[in-house]
Length: 419
Image 1 (cartoon, rainbow, N blue to C red):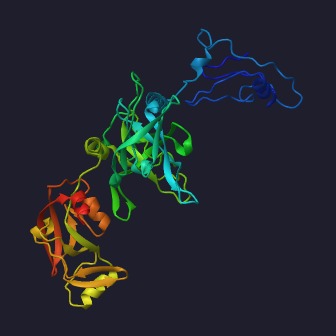
Image 2 (image 1 turned 90 degrees about the vertical axis):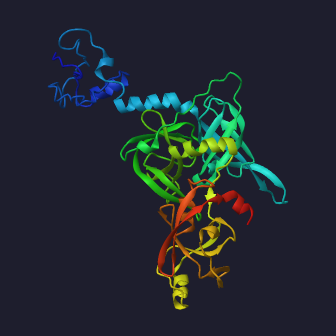
Image 3 (image 1 turned 180 degrees about the horizontal axis):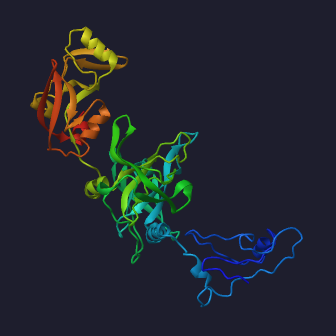
């Protein structure tokens, strides 16, 4: 009998029959992932061919060099990457919750009735029961429930929301003395394209599912709706599906570096293009959500209209000196407001377009706080990280000349409330 070095297995076999006998006998075997493989009977110089007698299955009695054969030594159980993934999952999966909601609907008799809403994921960020998730997961919820890894279910309440970044904080009351696992914050500012990331969530209601991918892109501006662009989003190819929303995107150390939020998908399922809100955004706004229940942002007190080709053409034909095709036309600057005090002018000639009415002849805003603005969403994005009382540079075109002025921002919530 020929002996083989560690990592190889000697089989006396006749064609494929011996392998069938081996499997049928329930005997386990392992393969080295470092290059060695199970050798065929022909390569081992063993009997084969039609009519040959079936030799009994034999194992090498001992590896070369003596000592007993230990099948555990033949194969490392996990590779380095697998070990990292397993470690992260075992430490943090219990800190990821499944969030389910009930919403209020109306029946055939126009009576309000509760019904099942959507579901999503969330990360426990405090052992007192605070959970970070997406705003769209809890939006319009009549009732809210947090489901833990041990199967327990608790009613929760919304503590604070930030629709502009699609983030929310919910709170449930764990039993006295309960020890909750939490997800630690990382630093999304240090991410690199190509870096491994892990997502834990509840896709399609399959609780605490792990998927792996890489950072595919950074600093992606993603338009959430007609007035909102979420800036600096993380793009990843980690599998993200409905139900993953609000769950953590983690680095290989098990630190949250993003909150999985949305996917690009023609079919509704994952096609490898997912987006996460960077954790540094969450770290900036979570304290305010806990304290105020909302994020107070600065605003410029004017009404603006996004330029479009027909409007530009109309203004040029009617003697208005307009030299740009993109920007925000100031229809009206609130009298005594921050824009008015800074010298920004609104229009004076009323016009109508479809069902809309506005004034022409005013300044055209082209940049705010160092960011080019050509849409309403750009304006919201430019002021997303500014507070009431902050000073920002607003640049505008007037009579073909570009001018910049310092504007002291008002409180957006108060401005909207007073409109």
